[in-house]
Image (cartoon, rainbow, N blue to C red):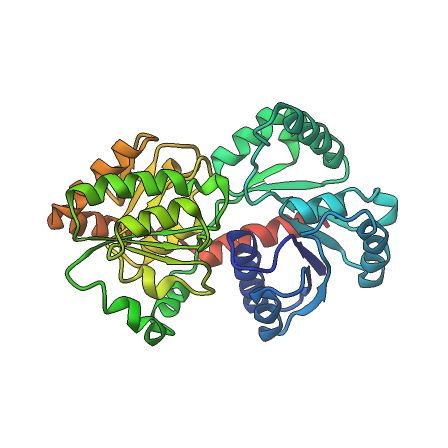
Length: 368
């Protein structure tokens, strides 16, 4: 069996981490499968896949260019896969647009976040496009029950093709990554002792809603200046960030990007999530659980799925006042944080990467 995985991005992110974990486990348990990964150049996952012995082909799935369509057909023909698994919107658009007569392999697609455009015209175009692309797709993988619900609602005809395989992380790999490279962050870690550290990790994207996090941080710091906010993934030129940093220079640490943020996450008191929506429990929430870090998250689809309120974190209303109140509650109650931390570790025991991998293997076998 030859599986070609097509990734929309090669930079740090869940849409790349999930297939990487999947392929690593398939290599370990099913050596008869041959893998090829097609992904954009320049990102950290190009080398990561090469380092585990995977044949990689670089292709700009992350850029909209009509000429790319002319390259995809000969590329896939030369690779001669049995199954093509596309990950993310860009790769899904290019590959699933090909009629089946041009690429006879069975096709699997994972959205890694089924987000409808916020504008009405964009919403209509996206829905019509998905209706067409569904014809060339044999399976749709939804990474959470909430994602499957919105996919079905948007396109009821997809119901028979959906397979729900909830995301997991490898707990031991997370803990190992949190220990590796810790010395690189000594200058930051030295600022944290005795402080209550709130960490937010996410790309600088409107969906992650950094402005809401900044508003909540300002409310917290008006009442408690012993709190440190660590934002990982935010652009340094962000005006709202710079205003907040100017007002509280000793309490705001911002890092634009980081291949491995887990050493810093492991030094945190809580993880903050202010996303407008998520496909399922974000991977960073699961990584935090493996490290015993509780979550303060907003009550929206995907985020609330992974928070068992007052067990592994606090799930609050979608406004800065509720977020700030929850953070101040945690900052002032070490016993609460300790109890939530214990709950987070208990939650992480549910993650089983081997069983998760076997669900994918069974699905691939079934398709053939």
